[in-house]
Image 1 (tube, rainbow, N blue to C red):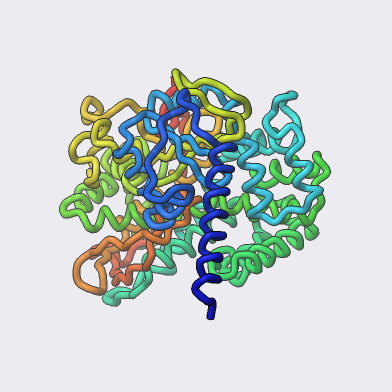
Image 2: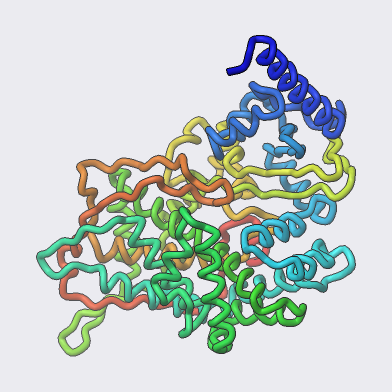
Length: 511
């Protein structure tokens, strides 16, 4: 035990250390009155860290309501953060994509999450922001992603493979006539979407066909070991020539890395990050869509009528065949599409992040070099001044064409980000989610095992996620929809020149 004098000495040393740290931080990251206003924090230096750990994605919303400013400053230990809350200011940020840059942040994130070697990190950081031209791994990887995921024949090929896998999963799920099945709703969706997505991206030698690899990818309890296991599987996949039979997306990404002399071990490690991009948000988005449509009275019946109207019924060898075309769904099912967009508004919590590359002004506010800038979608999506008094309600009709005059401009919908970093996979994800949701609704009846529908909590959602993740699964009982027991199903994707406009940029593409 310490004596009283010794205890006092320790206390004084501790107070002195905290004080010194505080003033050093003030010197390094002091607040200039020309910068955006400081957001209040309950405890100096660490208050925001505590707030983020407790409230996660809702903490930004709380701070926005407290400051009432279109942009504010958060002082974090060793890092200054600007948070943009106004849609108009977000548009200004997106126009300054060289000074307020995303690629340097993505490179740091990819190297840390994927465990890349120092050699690979150096390759990725070469001309990372494209300041010297459109070359280097960072810039060429962006081009590879956009080329493989833009609407057209290459994306259609991926989509068709994906929806056939969704069809197989639903065939396996459907109970026998007169029987029912119990499943974990989120678990089933995650497995079905993992299989459909990875087979369409990585082809017939898909590493995720090994269930142990798929399970390792989703293992949050031992992420480092799990990541290494998945990377080793990709290394074997590349050595066996699996990528030669893969989608244009996978081939484009691989070729960009080969062209920039990335070691094969690191190509495999980076592809774990590529899997994260195509997988982690689709399953929760499909989960919330199915759950919210089933738990809101009357909505499911109305959407079923829309879907039923799109089903083509034929008879072949005395067998009834019902076919659904995803292109037709997008063109004809306005309530389904509105509900999907509302799910993304209601459940998204992604944050667009930028690094301030040099001192600059954003309107009247000074932004300092080295600081980070965030644009949390949830602040905008939960703003009653933008969306109206019912902003906290799930309103499946909010995005109907006839409701356009009652909602804000399209730039206020931030589920896919925007500008140069607009999610390139939004069309593929939309097709996949609509396929699984629409055909599930058309074929099956579902009810919760434990009484009424209850929305699970989302407190453990990863801060890097875009869509909230349920803390717990929901056990459901499913039956074949009455009158549809002796039916064979087909899911198709017809070519369409029309792009479903999810965001402002899509509207521009269709003009």
